[in-house]
Amino acid sequence: MSSQKKCPDCGSLEIVEDSHYAQNQLVCADCGFILTEGLLTTTYADEEHLQEVTYSRSTGQNEQTSRCVQRGVKRVRDLCKVLRLPSLFEDTAVSYYQQAIKRPGFSLVILEKKEMLVGCCVFVTCRQHNWPLTMGTVCLLLYGDKELFAKTYLRFLKELALDVPTLSLMDMVKTHLNSWCAVSIIHRLNLQVSYGLCGILIGRPMKQQAS
Image (cartoon, rainbow, N blue to C red; front, side):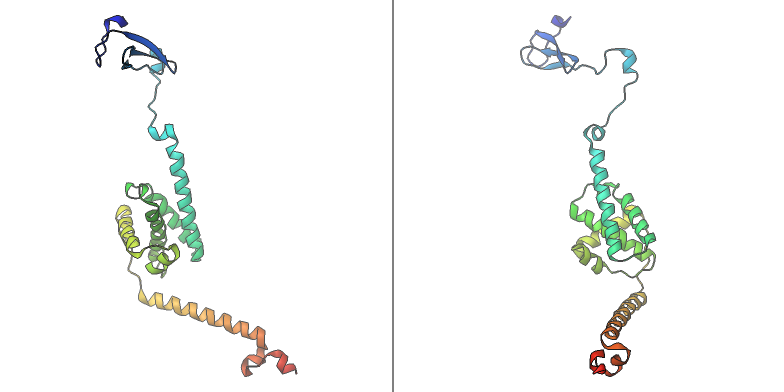
């Protein structure tokens, strides 16, 4: 049967059966052109149960993607911890990241843009909970470019169709004032340790008072 076939590439009639990785196929003996590729199964009954295997499953691409997502989630949690955000904020930001990284607009981008995505998830979460956090603070912590962050932020809102409230300037001022008061209180407590309760009023250390 094989002698009746003709190689479409060189016209040779020297067609032979070749077993390649246990798969029978017809090959031209003169030029090596493959006329028909073999099947993974040799019976019709087996072929009924064949299933397609995607490229990503056969190469482990899914496992690599999963590791990338895990690293991104860790970056989100680390940023939340640096900002000392509540656990609810952290979980929300992680959820946003897991949704966004699956979108084509973020799954196949440069590493720097994925880093900005981490900041966007935390930034949006804080905005939605009326927690004053500026874009400049996020970029400072991530060593990121503000222009790139702004572009990523707008794309992020569009991809997830999120509605983010405007930042309240009064809340931001209040937070900064609270932070300043906290620093002032800590400073005064340190003075009490150094000077004593009476010493802080007259400005002399406890050792000088005792003498």
